[in-house]
Amino acid sequence: MAQQRMNVQSPVERLFANRWSTRAFDADKPVNSEQLATCLEAARWAPSCFGEEPWHFIVADRFSDETAWQKVLDCLAAKNQLWAKQAPLLIIAAADPVFTKNGNANRWAEYDTGQAAICMCLQAAALGLASHQMGGFDAEALKQALGMPEKMHVMSVTALGHAGDVQTLDDDFQASETAPRTRKPLTDIVHAGCWQQAWQAPAGAGWEARYQETPIESLPWFHAGLDPDIGAALDQLMPDQHVPAQHVLAQHKLSAGHILDLGCGPGTQSAALAQRGFDVTASDISNSAIAAAKQRAEKAGLNIAFQTDDVLNSRLQGPFDVIVDRGVFHCFPEKADQQAYVATAKRLLAHDGILLLKCFHKDETCEMGPPGRYDETDIRGFFANGFELVETHTSRFKGPIELQPKALFCILKRTGEAT
Image 1 (cartoon, rainbow, N blue to C red):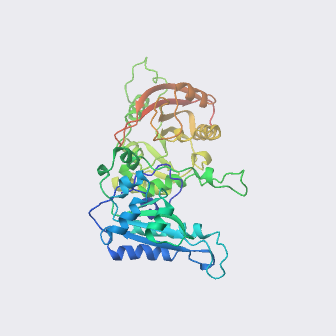
Image 2 (cartoon, rainbow, N blue to C red):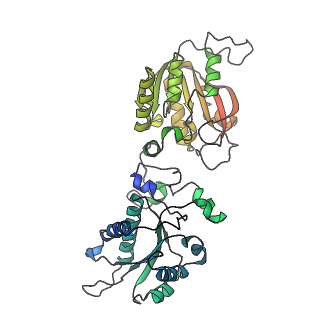
């Protein structure tokens, strides 16, 4: 039911990932009374100021009281009616704006009613139900139609039911149902100590979330075998491979085979490299990714050294003859992070060591994917200090998704003494 989560910045309970505001409901499937009671019970246990519990809910069930349900539907905004007409339940949440104990204004009533409403929706998600809270309605018409006290503040109408077929929706709604879920980054909404200072999530938290929530084979960057660009480059670099003298790589033969798979992810590249006889060290910022990669290697009987590591603050020790990067560098659009990456690569590579770098190409315009997209000129500038750009060519990232993003594949040689 849940759409693909994009740009998740920290692991969360799967309940939060599964809850989303669908518009597609199964019009023929009612919510049974036990399920409804459980959802409302969850709302009842929401926190509130002084334990006031200022919320009230009116349940309109199309299967048991179609008249009341129709009254609620008629008070919704026209666009909401187009899809909410399929929902078996329409539930009004209203806030009592005064404290019962003294009649004073309760400025937290609306906030607390919202807490109760989300508790109801989260419980619905836990039961496998779908929900969608609406703010588009005529509050005065609702109060009149349902006989509500004038003082009550109508906060929302929630459609509740079983998720239905997206194809039953109008075309405009189908697009929103299938679009990736997005949220503002934490740096935009969370402040550290003062308004002017953004709070920063741990560097690896977002990657940890993706690996915990998504099956390995469904990750957009998953590739079962060795990436063809990496394989072809290694074939050219190995001394036992015949390369024409005029080939640009002929003068950059590898004398040894200690390889770092940087950002190894699920470990498919690491395993393929080890199967070719290389001495492989594999690193990733996600503990879950490393665990999955270890399991893959053990199952295949491969000896690979795995280490959880952040390339921007690396604890790895070189030297390596080759660093393979299939999709790390393009995660860094900021200059300071790019410089930190280059410094790490310089430190870890042996003299004349090779960096095989594959990143999104600047010509790739799809919204999905990393923030950094580069061309040959960009790469030359980023790696001007300490590297020679040996070769580049355009390519594609092949994976489980139909879209194969345009990529730039680069072969860079470490120059100067190792640092």
